[in-house]
Image (tube, rainbow, N blue to C red; front, side, top):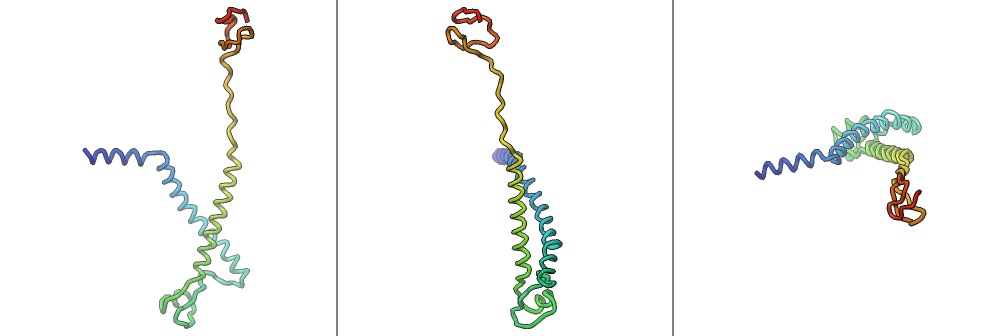
Length: 148
């Protein structure tokens, strides 16, 4: 019976709304990360490369043996390298993701207006003679029998 109880508990946990919401958030976040990575690699970095004289940041590296290589791949095949250009790209990727998420959250906060409290129609009134609370539809006070 312990296994059956454990399976039941797991089902209750897995079907809770917040777990499902979190899973959807992780999936959408992964897809959003791919979009931002493409945005950085395909749109932002070429512009930055053009501004800096045609530098391709992903090809910036430092071979640790002191030799010169034509490409990062050749250097990595020959020796250990520090690919700082890739690191710069990842830092820019992170900063852009952070800025986009910050901007999106600010927009959501602006769009989400506080809900105005809904005032319900009153169901009672106060008798002007005895000050007792009575039904709003009453034509005579049940406490003092005054005609309203």
